[in-house]
Amino acid sequence: MAALDWHDAAHYDRASALPCRHCGSPTLLRDDQRRPAHKVCAETSTTPTAAVAAPVPAGTGTAFLPTAQESPMDWQRALSAAHHAAERGLAVFPLARTKRPAIPSPHPKGTPCRGECGRFGHGVLDATTDHQVIDAMFGRASWATAYGIACGRAPHHLIGLDLDVKDGQDGIADLTALAEQHHFTMPATATVATPSGGLHHWLVAPPGARIVNSVKAVAPGIDVRGVAGYLVGPGSLGERGRYLFAPGTNPDTIAPAPDGLLALLTPKPTPAVLPDPDRLRQGIRKQGAYAKAVIEREAAKVAATKQPGRGRQLFASSAALGVHVAAGTVTEDVAFDALLSAGLSTGLPHPECERTIRRGFAKAAGTLRPAA
Image 1 (cartoon, rainbow, N blue to C red):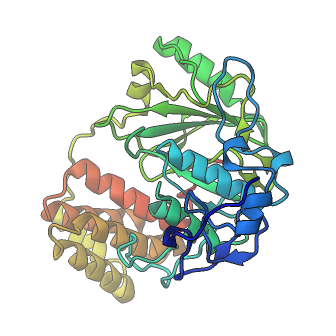
Image 2 (cartoon, rainbow, N blue to C red):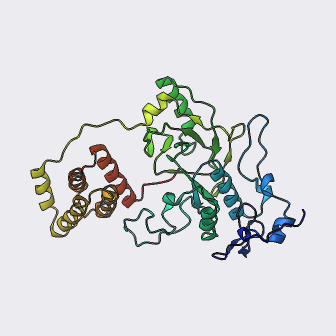
């Protein structure tokens, strides 16, 4: 390769030394795509950016992940694949081999921050398509071997169907049965093969749709990833192996979800059932002094928060109370009703209150999970 002219200041980032995308050693230099690279490494590399795409069967389009033979570093392969996903409008963030967020939270447990602090460590909330931010996140997580793709975000409003084929479950057969029962046809769409033998189907949702995360709610072998959920991206290495596009799939095609499937995945509106004030007061009194104080404190925080921030406070208080629910020190139905009553008093819609409280309880119980 000919020598590169890197005299331009754009090839230098005095703020942070990041691992070179070729050798892994720290460098302040950036290549012509603003990715960390030593000048010598970039000039002598036999794997330039234009050649990192994995071979794809004829007629299936171009994959955006490197093959195992093209890089000796799991970290580098995950970073490169994450960049390619970002180029296609998919927001990404680094994951550890466990498929959990690689960067730990910068806050004590229970702190109600959704990224407003500006630091990394907020899981899927950190997901971005900004290449410099992606480099910075991976630079903070040298142990990352995978990356997550945020669902529910523009422009794709991605839905992830996680079809498990393990422990006696067959999500692929379950999806076929659902399609027959509800009269829809699954389109050909980008599909990732998981190390356990399952599949992740990628689908596009209409911009106004709100697809919630669910585990086995649609069928025993199917998990759904929607708003605030994420999928493990192709090119990632997990504890059981590597995630790769399924043979014959077209990574360039993310098909719209069929109407029949969308109807199954969209939460049905439920009648607004307001907590009875007298029954709620009696339930709180029976909790004991400590539990009563905890419930009243969190409910008061929610009731005192108007726009903006009322939804964030409801989630934070739900997670805080959920810790006591999980520990058995607070009764779940009383905690739920107290939070619901407080949330409704701020003007939040009934369905949003219910959904937020359930998510807060799930976070506290540790059941708010990514796709397997």
